Image: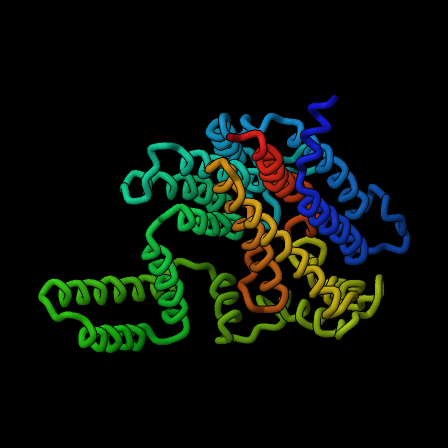
Length: 419
């Protein structure tokens, strides 16, 4: 009993309070988003908000189990946990139920579970375990390739399930690699890929190639003009040009029509308020109509009349903006930023490399979800269908994010026992 009291005494209360605040606010906003006069009780299990209550209760039980588990367990069994989730991702490809075009769900009675949500914390565990080993050296090719494979395997399997949004999340863990000493040139390369992709989609491919050529030609005048440097610049030009051509080819010949339309709408090249741009347009109307203080609880017209699709899941933030206004939306944003900053602060004080690395992974995943989800609702990010952590309706996501966060809370509570 005394040992258990010691465990809870070292729990970071600020993180737990931030978690509870987001979970409870999410529950209230799910209730507001899908409110039904015939089922007015928030505890009605026949409605989404009643089911979310069950997910919250079970999530709290899971959080307690994680806290009571030995902190060393997660490091020691990181690879088996990772392997188990990979196996589930393979099995669901063949036996899973298809929902919204994605075959990524196991149907269990009246509930559906999505293994991809659990693969996030499992991948973070495996990555932290590998990066914390004594033989890891960011300068070695092996130490650069293996972490990328750890991230790529679940991402590829999830991509095969036609769940592009969840697959992209794993790119956020590249920030963990950078924190551990991965060369900054890799991040610059990633940034260059994003910029070139956008330019290739926005402008004529040959104009983009010409601009690249002019910029690199100008760059030659600022470097030492040796044969090696000139050949390097020429090589960069060739690779960049081929990449631009491949993006243009993939866009026109690989992507489906609805995917191309979504990209064109996002880039402003096409207006489709009744098709691909409908969700975002209705979401922006809902958020904008909230003004400074909002229309009031259960008074959101856009949500009440179902103008916003997926309003309790991917677009839950528009309910906050409409009913609670700019002030309410700002409060939610500050809560998420406080959560991420607190995690990073705690990660930096860890005595264990595993705990520090895992903490950075938690912050990266949560911030990516928050940033992209909110960006989707206001039209700044593509609609890729990822939930708002602890806020959106859904058991799999709430369970997955709860485990992800509370493993770190457990690691942090154990730091005082490490020499």
